[in-house]
Length: 100
Image (cartoon, rainbow, N blue to C red; front, top):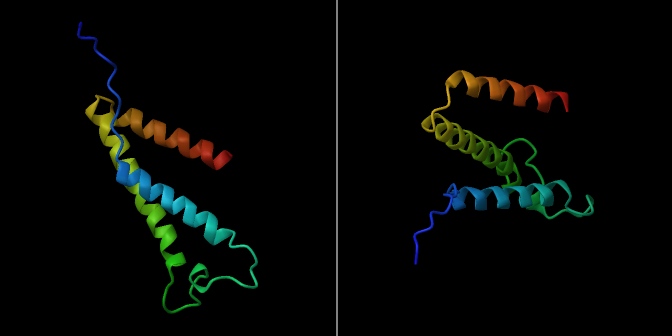
C-alpha cells in the first residue's frame, strides 16, 4: 500500500464550537420565548439588581468572539501573514459589516 498524503485539516476546538452552539440556541430561546405574557422567569432579564441565566448569554457570546479572534489570528501569524495584512482584513471586514 502506498503512502498517500492527505491534505491536513485544520483542527477545530470542539469545546468552543459546543459553547457557541449552546449560546446561539440560548439566544434564540431568550429572544423568542413564545408568549411574552407567560415567560418562564429565568428567560427574563433581571430588573436592576441581580441576574438570571439570560443575563449571562451576551457575556458568553463576547467571550466566544474574543477566543475565536485570538485563535484565528494567531494561526495566521504563525503561518507567516504580516500584521499589516491582518489589520487591513479586520478594517475591511468591519466596514463591510457596518455597511450591511
